[in-house]
Amino acid sequence: MSVMSHDVTIKCYPLRHQLCTNLPQLLLCTVFPTMADKKPFYSSNPQDTSFRRTWDRDEYERKARERARADREKDDDEDRKLKGLAPKSRSSSNRPNPPRDLLKAREEKVVLDANLNKTQVVQSAAGLASKQPGYYCKVCDCTVKDSVNYLDHINGKKHQKAMGMSMRVEKSTVDQVKERLLALKRKAEQTDEKEYDLDARIEAAKREEEEGKRRRKERKKQKREEERGGKESDVPATEEDDEMAKLMGFGGFKTSKT
Ligand SMILES: [Zn+2]
Image (cartoon, rainbow, N blue to C red):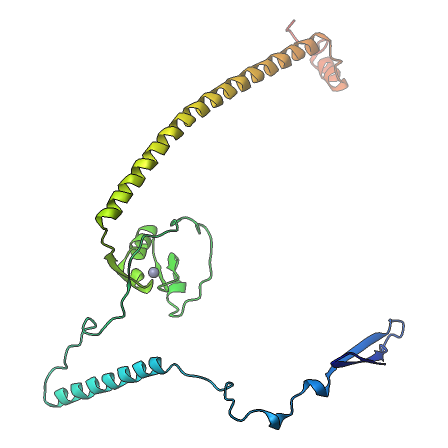
């Protein structure tokens, strides 16, 4: 069987199951691309090199400069060592650091007991962080022992640096301060309105509670009355009770209450 569609040829072969001929016949379908779909290999443009990999020239130039500088420093240090001098101190502050963002307030809430009584498997590159229990910081790949240390860590310099922030905070302008004060004032006014609402709600809750109490009391009263009615009609004593009564030498178990 052969079906021609406009650009692919579909050939279907009936296939009989070799072990069990009772099974329905399966159709094995193969899709062949037709020649119209194929481009001759040698007709492609030899100037087209878009398939080749490309490189970030600036990035590699920066890396090359860095490497050359490190080599130069190493040579200098070796020369100084031969002369009997201590190697030049090159603290990290001398090197130009990439500018980091100003310190920003955290937007998400820190829930310290979110993973309480839970076991989590962490992927730790150094391998040390995953070996002890405690609070794990994904950013710095480290584990601290308790919540106090964890808070210290996430507010600390090392963690903020890993987050791409410096410890400097933005300097506020006069306008920003004024705006903030206004916002606080507006918020205070809003909470006053809410308090009024709260009083009304407390009143409603009290009323509801009293209603509930009254209903419960009524139900209890009704139950008690029902019980009293049930006791007045004499309950037939069971055989066991009668036997026990005979054994002990008196007529039977009867309530003394009337
Ligand atoms: Zn951290």
